[in-house]
Length: 117
Image (cartoon, rainbow, N blue to C red):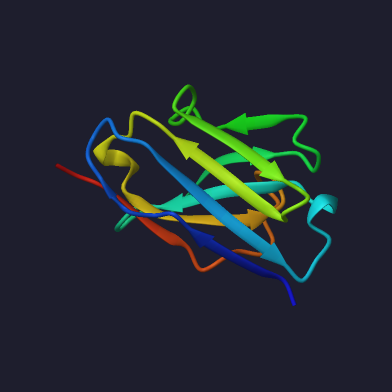
């Protein structure tokens, strides 16, 4: 059974930083590209970032370029998202998912990021 468990969400002030983690199990992690997706209150899901199976290529939504860094540790079956200079509009539930933009398959349960003073 595919299992994705996100963690690291918190209340942070504007301009602050957070690192989200996603622990993967139940599948061969390094066979898959992985993504982060977020859903803000009252809005639909928004793809945020993706990384290839070996970390060789990364991709970002325009809204996060220059402020986010996706990475993975295949030895630990873990995906990360470092977010800096957070803004109020980054407030959302953040999900990790298998696959890349446009072909997301399995999702975790999400972790809440709230950016507020």
